[in-house]
Amino acid sequence: LDITEKTLALLADLSSGYSSGKMLLKLEGVHFILANHTSAEFPFIDVAANSRLRTTFYSTLCKLLFSDDSTLKFKQFMAPFTELLTQLREQTSQEAFQSPNVCKALIGLLRDLRGVVSACSSRRTYTLFFEWIYPDFTPVLQRAAATYYAMPEVTTPLLKLYAELVYNKAQRLTFDSSSPNGILLFRDASSIVVSYGNAILKHQVSAGADMYAAKYKGISLCMLLLTRALSGNYVNFGVFALYGDRALSDCLEVTLQLCLSMKLEDIMAYT
Image (tube, rainbow, N blue to C red; front, side):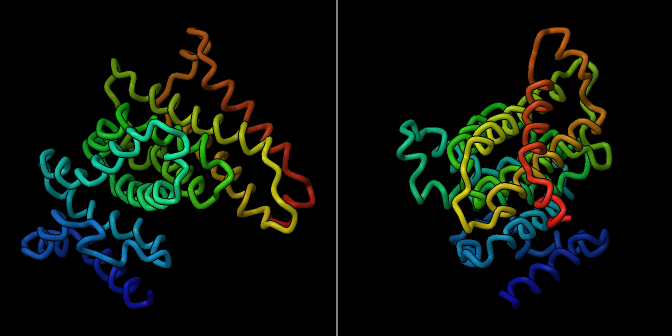
């Protein structure tokens, strides 16, 4: 783990520099990695202890990928994710969707996608990702929130992915004035919070379990997600009331209920 982590840290440092990044893109080995980045070529991805490193790995690769303006290269890079999400979308039975293999695939996928989104530092790159994932694959993520709400191994990377997705850093979420994408993004994020929040409010954590890992971390991520969405300045929230859409009000209501569900002594213990 230590060698893998330091190797990825070095690659991340090299890709972050303008000159070093351009130099890396001239190497055949880097082009090979960008074209072949699955666990078949990099077995460390499938090692459970390396799960957190997957985000770093894909964030680094996408910094290099986005140095090129080619949309085709992005689609080719995302092809393994497209294939996996298509397979998950076709899991019609709830039993199949709850299988250990699907759960494992989801955990890795969510961490990978967060790495991709975190590397989107401009309007162009963010739009590429948003148009890829919405609306084709977001129903899979909605279903994951409703199915695995009691499994922090899934919900934590899922909520972190959405918290990154709604984060308007460097003004990357700048849509055209006639585009509904900002509203669609908020509605999608809101439904994730509402679905997870309503389920976790009813869920009874077993005695002796780590309350922070099982429940409070998810609540804090919901609040982070909502904070970033409200302060992103890319949604006209008056539209929801005008058209009778409850996406905003439901999200606020559930988030407040989540806050009130926490015991005061627990809040003081984790501050």
